[in-house]
Image 1 (tube, protein in one colour):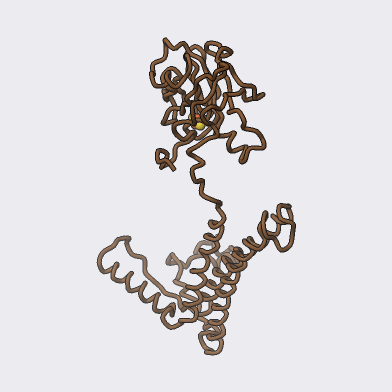
Image 2 (cartoon, rainbow, N blue to C red; image 1 turned 30 degrees about the vertical axis):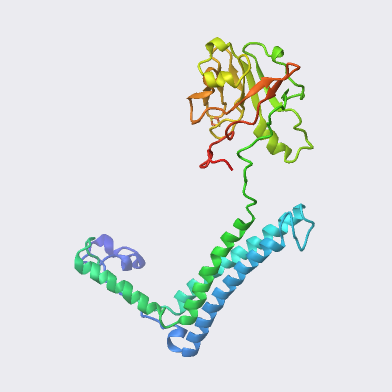
Length: 350
Ligand code: FES
């Protein structure tokens, strides 16, 4: 020991390593038995507490499911007028409370179980190289099996039953909202308001359009005649029926079928992008391309609105049109296929 060492504060010196270097192994503190380890009555009490905590979790799930139906924002609500903010508030409060209780008390039961009943003796395991030689694997399997044995799962059917019940009931909290997802769409995705004989009208003021009013390379945003705010599901019908007409020189048309579904170069296409449904409202007069502003899908009007660029995968559906006796443009029927984004059974007629 140097002179400098002897002059150190005794408290610091006490923390210094011994002359030989390193520290002696302090070992583990003496093991203290818990109440439940020495008193069978405490053990049974702890067991009942754990089971009770799982039961409280079950009650939380029941509260969630019950309040989901008894405090709905728009329908039945025991504490507020349906459709008001108070109704939403009570719905959020009780469903949130139920779910919080369900999840919290499962955790509380697991923690109490581990702290009071599961073995708490310390184990010392020397470090060894990482690797899965057969002996280590066998040892690991033995440890796991021993752990399972020590957890007492086989000896504590009350806890196991309560735990299985709590875990089995919890998914109901997830499944219950699925029951209110609403009706299936039926054939609504396959049809629009367009029917044979309906006039094409200007979107902004509802006036019918004569073929003679459609100048070369012009574009009109159109809606079917008779689609008014009194129409059932007005907004949905309006969203599906949105379309445009453009007039091209039939000489530059490359798609006979598309030209045949138009009238003297006047072609009507759905305005709903076949990618994810944005309105395709930009028309380049020089190139005769229609552009979707969302992800730049580009449709060639001269070729049946086929996709020439972008993520859309199918042409814009074309509305077959003709003129009536007064020269107004009218639909020959609905779109021949569903408008908008594709879905898995798009070509299966409902
Ligand atoms: S919605 Fe039109 S390109 Fe994506």
